[in-house]
Image (cartoon, rainbow, N blue to C red; front, side, top):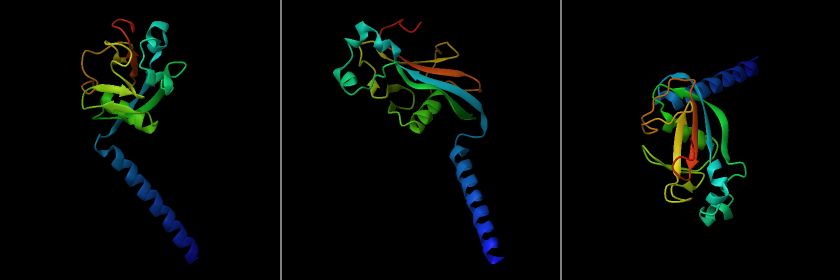
Length: 159
């Protein structure tokens, strides 16, 4: 009887510790408000004229996926204080995808940096198919949005 009591108590304590730990992870972002989908791609690099401009390290280290997809569309929970950049950083961390971003600007994803494929190349983001006119750290999420981070090689190639 004592053994069952202590076993049950241990299980209850483990569940409580897990629940507290999980809530602590989202405390600094506020309450959950929904979810969004996010994808990361670099398909424009695969075009022949762009592959010729790509830094050798990108090709030698196989950093450009053969289909141009770094992260397939994935669902992510969002919280009150989330923005596009916090979601990107979280999903990259969860999927062990390299990201180099400061508080407002994405310099690199998957070791593919701005200007790695020409002078005007870099990362852009889209929400529901539109390119917002604010930084990713300023775009507040409501839930239900579809976010895509895409690498551009020349102005206008992502229209």
